Image (tube, rainbow, N blue to C red; front, side, top):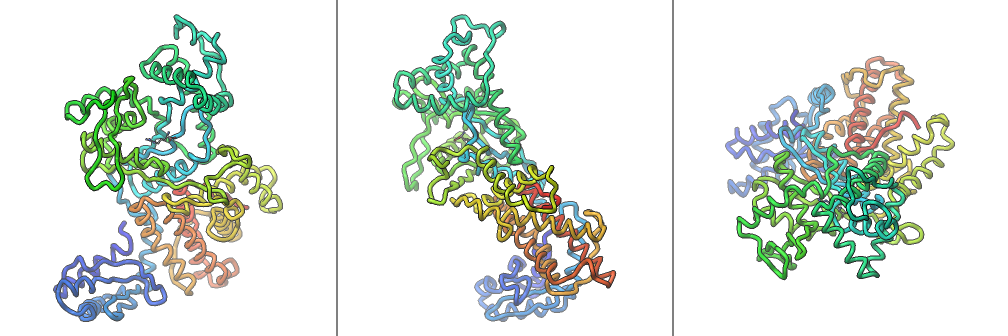
Length: 586
Ligand code: ARG
């Protein structure tokens, strides 16, 4: 279904054409002066340059044509050449009816037939999920859902960091603590010998320990590097141990992500690109792009207009091992083969910008993907504490994701403790949902590129732009429908508009599709957050002025209840796209 501005554009373009002007001038947008009109077209200004005429004259000619059209309540010219448009209520209601009966609730399906590979999460094996990975997970999940809501096929991949030095460090430390393990003995046989049971807590403790040690102890560091290289050349003992670590780690990660309502289609890791590295190296060599520099194989990616130096990307280190860029390039090959995607988006900390510039430029030079394939880093900002520095635990350490969720859930629990609407049994689960909604909305309301300050009190507030407020609005609608004895998905029939608050709410519903379109084009879920909030506020204003349940006029009452049902459906759609689970009552 076309959005309302797209539909109006057809009408206005035709009017421009019938006056002898270029139809492309008829672009329509939602008015930024709702007090004057609902929609506007500024095409007369561009037309003035093109046709060497006063914009006012062009606008007047076009307005005269539009005034003949019964869909407009008003088609006026405003100096020096704006076209201000307002629809009749009848036309308005017709569009609302179309939205209510559209399976996508009017959300434009512009992704039909197109595939996106979405790389987000990016946790590392054997390291606990910490809040540095929180934003990538939350934003990536919302983008996945947003793109799907707009008709794209999206393949989400967690792209585990499972192949680099961190794993060598963990294995090196295990080998010092447990030298007696069979995997550290000569003649280890993966068929015969067992790997001792590992648990997530041990692994999570070992990595920071080993990482610190490698900074102080050169010999240990060299050992870890040696093990990494041996693992990458598939030493059977290290592979067996690595698989055991992988299993434990992934189970732990899945548990944490599911608390956040985040999930992935693919649990691939850097290691899965291993089978594509020879091919990658072959391509780079055949195209004459790769050369030996100080013992390493590198590809130049600098461009003349670079403001800061972009060093060559290293494909093979002097010990023949692969690095982060190698696995990312090989993964592009893999994704091209598996999915031939139209777009590959990476939701990763913006401090990795240089890495991705190098990788994308190398991929383009080597033509690993067609020119038309979009490769884009969505470089995310950090979540800061009240001191403006990256959020830390009280003792200055890196906060674990699970601890953050626990803390927020606990606060949410204290808030709802007194609520008469929830029975004790469900309070825990409810608090968890409210807590996660608060964290996610508090994050998503900020554009992904911006840093923001984590403020639990604010995020959990029942007022203002918060996840809590949105959940609460849905529960209010639930309660209206309960009192009216109406099913939540009863058919929607809106027959008339009785007041301005209603018209405003309907307008918000009508322009929701514009918000989604804008959000997907900008790849920015924050516009969905904003629209959800506007919609909730518009409903609240309408509800405060209309006594729905007690309304005596049956037609009015049923229209109003329909409006509540439609608003609820739309709010739930927004929440779903944001990856936030609604609650029945609170
Ligand atoms: N594991 C990486 C890190 O923690 C993030 C991975 C991002 N994705 C990618 N394709 N490089 O820094």
